Amino acid sequence: MKRVLLVLALLLPVGCFAENEADKSIEDSCGATGLDHLLGQPRSVLADMTFKRPVRVLAPNQPMTMDYNPERLNFDTDDEGLIDKVWCG
Image (tube, rainbow, N blue to C red; front, side, top):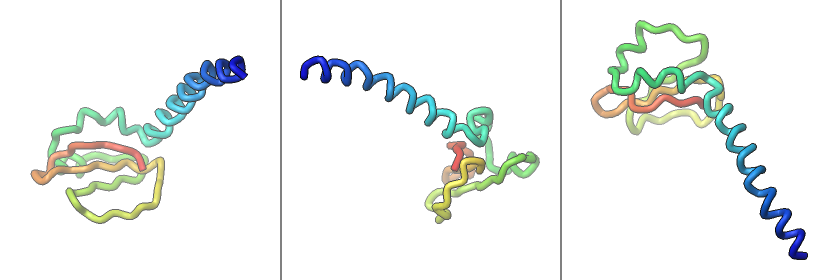
């Protein structure tokens, strides 16, 4: 019984690592990490940009649909209209 628990304890970190790597690729399925340079910029900079993916710009407390689209770029803005988060979903 102790051997079984030891084997399970050794396999647990491997399973977590593989899951985290998969989560990372899903998290950036829309290319959001490549747009970190837009953080702190006014939302108006997005008007002059073109994207190959669907885009959603969200103001604070703005209602949004809960449909998950891993290809969609989401830009969250703060009360001053500055981009404070870029994410996929």
